[in-house]
Every structure is written in C-alpha cells, then in structure tokens.
Amino acid sequence: MKFSTKRRSLLLIAIVALILIHAVYLNGSIKDLFNVTAIELVLLSVVISYAIKRKHLQIKPLTRLLIHGKETNLELTIKRFYYYALVQKEQGHIELEHELEKEENSFVRRGSLLAIEGVPEDELRLILENELKGEQYRYQQMGGFFRLVALLAPGMGLVGTLLGMTGVLKTLSDFSHTGYSLSSAVVATLYGALLANMFALPCYYRLMDIYDREMFEKRLYIEGCIGLQRREIPRVLFEKLNSFLPSDQKLVLVKEPGSSKGTIERQEQSYAG
Image (cartoon, rainbow, N blue to C red; front, side, top):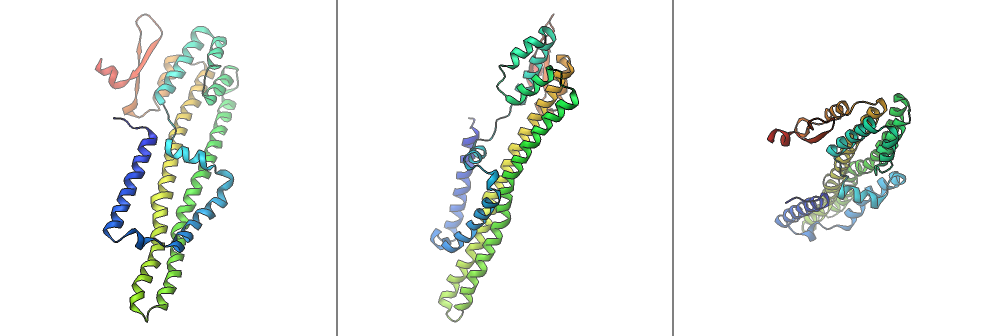
C-alpha cells in the first residue's frame, strides 16, 4: 500500500508524538512538564526568527510545501525532451512551437521557446541559471528561518533554566520545595532542545531535501533546453539526460523496427523483456 507525501508526513508526526507521550508517561506526567514561563521563553525564539525572516516567509505556502512536498518525475522529464527533439527533427520548429504552447511547466516552456528562437547557448544558459538562483535564494531564506529557530531555541531554554535556578536558590532552606523548583527550571532546557531537534532541524532538512530534488530536475530542464538549442538528435539528447540519473533509475531507449522513434522504458523492465 502506497502513501501520499502528505500521509507519510502526518504518519511520521503521529509516530513521533506517540513516542514523546510514551516517554513522558514513563518518567512522570505531562502536568509535571508544563511550565508557562518556559514555554513563553522558548517560543520567543520563534518570534525573533520570524521577525528577522518575515519578508521571505509565507506561512501557508511553507506549511503546504513541508507537508506535501514537490513531486518530481525525472523519467517524465526525459521522455518530454526526447519527444520535443523528435518533433524538432521530423516536423520542424513551427510544429515544435505549437507543441510547446501546450506545455504546462512554465520553466520548460519558456526555456524551450527561447532555445528554438535562436538565443545563443551561453545567453540561454545564463537566463535559466539566473532563474535557478532566484529559487535557491527563496529556499535559503525559508531554511534560514528554521536554522535560526534551531540556534535560538536551546539558548532561550537555557535562559529559562537560569531564571528558574534563581527560584531554586531562594528555596534552599526549604527542601520540600527545592526539588519542584529544580524540575521546573530544567523544563525550559527540555523545551528548547525539543523545539530545535524535533521541529526546527527536521523541517530544515525536509526543506533542503525538497530543494535538492527540485534543483536536480531543473538541471535536467536546462540541459534539455540546451539540447533543443543545439538541435541535437533525439538519441543523443536522451543519452545525455539519462546520464544524470543514478544507476538504479537508468532508462533505456527501445527502438521500433524500421523507425527512428523509440520507446523509453525503465532498465529493469527492458531486461525482463
């Protein structure tokens, strides 16, 4: 049974929550770990981080991105450019332009249209690379928010602990209250560690994983557009794009007898046949 990205994310969150609840249950009660002052101090790290990065953050799109991710399909990308190269070779630029007008991906459509309009290769690559830099900057700013939270949260937790320790020192003469005051002081450090290691850092690395996969696919887009600009034959363009894939994801081009066209299949499927 396959799960969507959203369901996998929610399942992981539920598992982590259950583990935390179980750990708390074994070592006391949730009431023992509840401290309003500690919560306020640790959440202050989120407020400070948001205040610094607010110009680059949109909460709803960011939340949706973290939960759903961004689907990439490298096989479809290679098939797409192989098809465009076939149209360019067999039917010419005009027909290819008509096909590109139907293309839903704006990056591929714009880059391919620039390619067949005769934009020099160096300029075309520069234009597309600059667009990637814009995406890179956006992801860096979003990731910077979570990195800042991960940096500040433990520090704010330590501040809460130090403030709580002042209460401990005041009750040293009354040992019946010292243990309670000490446990309340340590809770702030716990909150800071949990916020950093169970929320901020996982969100950051989740975001970077989405970024890496998206940038890898867009690198294929750029090479595909450059291939159209060079008017490379479909087979050469296919092999060039296929070389980017790891060995366990390689594709093969199965030629149709008596035709220049071919069918792109996964490598294991081809061997099985």
